[in-house]
Length: 215
Image (cartoon, rainbow, N blue to C red):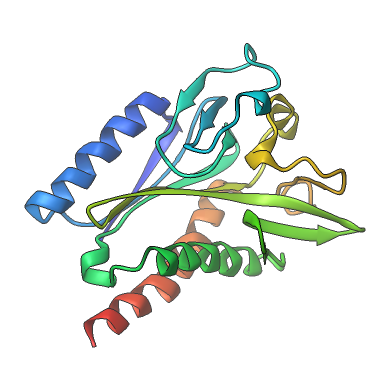
């Protein structure tokens, strides 16, 4: 199991190419699994269920076909993206369980900062309820190739939330639903501090998952 943290902003095409190569190496050559933490320059990605009408400002930022599940998502500075390349043959070939573990990973990480993240039936991602609203703080979008996972999660630490106005995030349009961040909630956290919390929570969820699969 390897961890990689990229400094600066990583171009989306570069990240896709690197993920594709690593997934193939894990699948065919037994390369170590990888969690890659990074930030992207401002951009929108379209998942396999994206609807053209949900791109509200087509010329604002580059748009990329992501190949992952889901709809439109924003990535940009101040958002921690975690690309997760795991071998589910070794951990148990259960995609639903994997997605559930990603959700729990986010929830446990947020809890370390006293933020209550919650699942919602029919809505992808992790949500924060406050003052009669429910705002999305983290997105999830994954792809699995021959039981090796890639893509992953994106958590809003302190991005420019106005950039989400160019899309209907994940197809959600209800008036009482929106997007938030740790900074918007009043938690000013460095990316290094957040990464430490991510890694600790990951080990709690996914290492126990690996042990369970081995039993």
